[in-house]
Length: 403
Picture 1: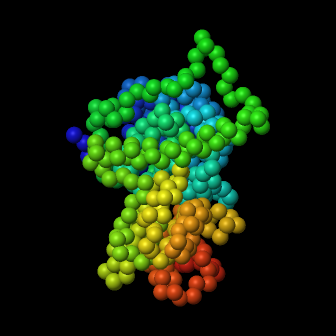
Picture 2 (picture 1 turned 135 degrees about the vertical axis):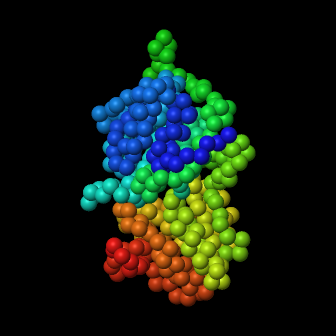
Picture 3 (picture 1 turned 180 degrees about the vertical axis):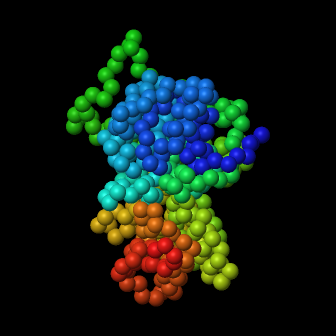
């Protein structure tokens, strides 16, 4: 029977890691992720976790330790954020190229400069092409469940890819919520011990990470891309298995009031809750607006997105980062590319918001929705890109106390 508890998002994530029975945890602290590895270290000290804890000297070293441990067949976990992810950039590519099922918990945080410890997604969106599966969570319960799913996805013999499980820094990482913990026996049944594909063995030495000369390198990269694309089927299957076993409803893309929607908001992470409140308010006013919450960003679910948006006239893509020089954020670019081939594709507008932890409110989503509804009515659109919740020309701002 599930146990109801009150935990922060970071605590929930750490509890899930403990219940997944990792063999090796490589750690280095960074705000707002630190609480995850502090919790895991406390579990270890209390004898609640049987794993090798490695206190690395940097995030680069932490990921290097994860790579070495995973090569031996160990179940491996680490956690990071922001500059930590930037510092391990080189090793992220090594982990995915080696096809190692490492799981990393991420408390998303803005990248410098200026120094900012608050939330946006510039860190993980900045490494979106590193070959890692990326899953984004709306709340602590999702963060808890996703870790269990992530190990199962990563270790599937037809995937063998590292997974990032991401939640918004402070908004989720440090906010206490009520959630249900699963029974250990149920998790053990859902997530059996890892069966290593080709573990390294000192008695049978092999070369790992040798030079990829031009005569072989392209084929290796294509194999990695095929595996990443195929992993979407595996993710769907494991979500389905998890839903049946634990009575949940996880999907690649979740829809809300999309049946008759003329325009839609597309969100990622914790903003989905605020966006849903805005949709409810606008629906009461008779406005046909719906909401899509993207949960899996890599691999990008192109066909699923096309199916979800084929009947709307305009879509507002809500990013928590800016991809400089692209007139929008990373998610906005992906959506434009995914929908390009649709015969009657909707008008796509990019709305970066919440940068550096700036609050995004219901009123902001109302303003965005007003713009989208005008577009749906064939009114003239002068810009396809506006920053939300920012002072200055070309931005959408709502005045409220504290800003």
